[in-house]
Amino acid sequence: MENQPKYDIDNSFGTIVHWAERALINRLSQNYRSNGYDITVEQWRVIANLWNREGQSQRELAEAVRKDKTGMTRILNGMEKRDLVVRTPDRTDARNKRIYLTRKGRELQQALVVLTRKTLDEALKGIAEDDIEGCKKVLRRVIGNLREQDGEP
Image (cartoon, rainbow, N blue to C red):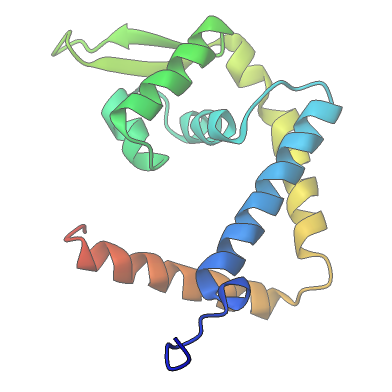
């Protein structure tokens, strides 16, 4: 056992990325709740994506927010119950559903963007813009490396 390599899990790249993600998600959720918005970060990702491109198919939306089919269905079911989105049959293939924001979903945009920016400002306080851009570049490279190994584009 003495000759086995040691692994400092608390200082590993993956652990630090995970902790940063969890801290950001927790603060974002806290900021939404404390301002009266009962929205999860998963729902935020769907809503923000639809603000940019409404009428996506459920499959396209799942790919955009990196969710599997079951997870996307679960998220959309909850959002539909809360009147944030509506699923309508595709005009060319009724088996496919197109996802649209309801008026209530669209009305959340301004407040949620403000709260999200506030959260990011809290998270990135005191960090130089060049460091932030460098970090994003490294993380995009990690994602690309792993997708490439999985045969994804």
